[in-house]
Length: 153
Image 1 (cartoon, rainbow, N blue to C red):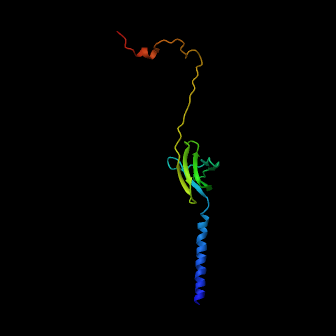
Image 2 (image 1 turned 90 degrees about the vertical axis):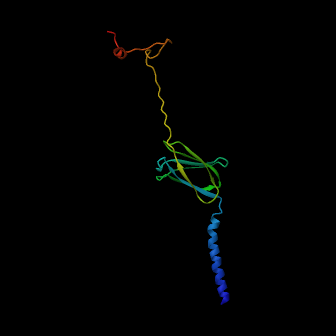
Image 3 (image 1 turned 180 degrees about the vertical axis):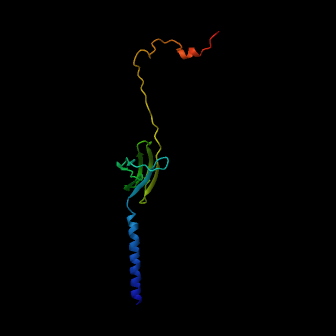
């Protein structure tokens, strides 16, 4: 009877160790994942942003587009340091260096800044009236100035 109890205990103990060792073995890989949410300055989520992760030494490069919730995810990313770039229309590009060192997902909160807009204006002269051809100091006087001048009586 004692022998059957020992066999039973060792069988259960072996089964527990086998089941517990399986998840640990799955984490011994050499890749992880990157995930995050892209937000604007007010905290709103940015859909359609382009997220790129790259490691120039190995040539590794992946691109993703954020979903309607502003979320992105890269899976099966080898352990290395990476350069992350996020671009979206109307926002300044965002860059960050990220290291993937374990199977635990790297979660990145990304806040984009509104880009500065620039406007250029080209002025062209249509005739000779606007272009000064003689470099001399002078004052242009119009009738509104002479109408406001005090007159001697």
